Image (cartoon, rainbow, N blue to C red; front, side):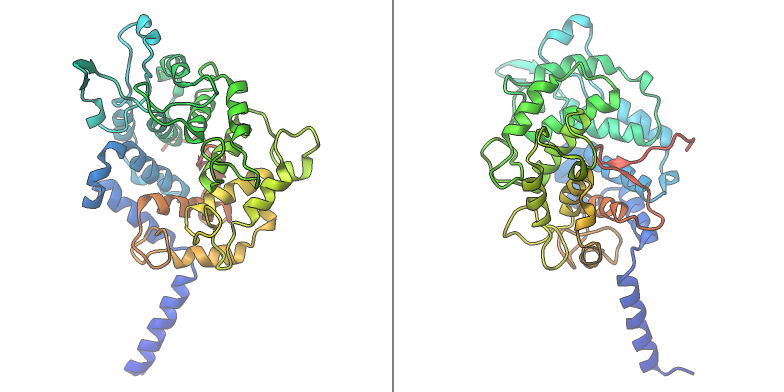
Length: 362
C-alpha cells in the first residue's frame, strides 16, 4: 500500500501531466459558468454584453460543445438587439442600423436637447452576426439590407470607418468589422472596397507591420485586421508566401519578418516589440501567419508550452502565465489551439474569427 509520501508525489506528477495537456472539459465548464451568469467583475462591461456572448458561444463551438446553449433563446436575444429604421427614408438619415452591444445601449440618450435613439455599433454587429452564423441561423430572415445600406454612412472619405454614427475614432478595427459584416451578409454594397484597401495599405509601417492608423506603431491586432480585411475583400490570396509576385499589393517579406519576430523566446507572441508575450497574440499574429501560409515557420512546440502556462486550473486562459482567466483571452487561447490542430477542437475560419460552420441542426 502506498504511503502518504508516495501519494503526494503522484499527485504532483499527475498535476504536472495535466498542465501539459489542453483541458477541453475544464474549458467547457468555465464557459458554462459564464454562460449561466457573468461574474461581478464584468458588470462594468455591460455595454459590451454582446461581445462577451460572442466569446462564450463561439468558444463553445470551437470546443464542440454548442449543445450546451439554448439556441432559440440565444437567437431571440440577438435579434432583439438589432436597430430597425421606421421606414425606407430613415436609411438616409446618417444613422447605422446594425446591432446594439447591450440592452442599456438601446435606451434613448439626449445630446444638446436632441434625442438620439440609436447607437448600434459596428463591432457589436460583427459579434451578433458571428453568433448567428455560429448557431446556423437562416440569414435570409435578417434585415440585412438596412445594415448594408446604412453602413455606408460610417465610411469616411479616406476609406476608414467610424463604429457609430454619432462619431468616434476611425481605424483598422472598424474596417475589419465592416469587411466581416459584408462577407457574412454576402453583400458588399455597404463598403467602398477600393477606398478601404487604400486606407489599409496606408497603415503599413516601415517595419512591415500595420498600425491602427497611418503613421502609428505596428501592432499585432492591427496587422491581423489589415491582412484579414484584404483577404476577405479579395485583394490578396491565401498562402501569399508561396504565390507572391512583384504585383502583390503588400510588402510580404517585410510583413513576414515582422510577424515572425513577434514570437518571443518563451514561445508566446508579443503584440509589439519589447513587450512580453500575451495569450491573445497567438491568434492575432499567428492568424496572420496562417493567412500568409507561413505558419510552418513558427515554433509550434514552444508556443503550445507557453499557452499551457496561461491555462487556468479553473478553465479558460489568462493574459499572462499563472493569472486568473478572462473571457477575451480564453477565447483567443481556444482559437490558438484550433490553429495548432488540437484534438477535439473545431477548425477555424481565420479571417472571420469563428469556427468553420457545418450546417447541422443543433
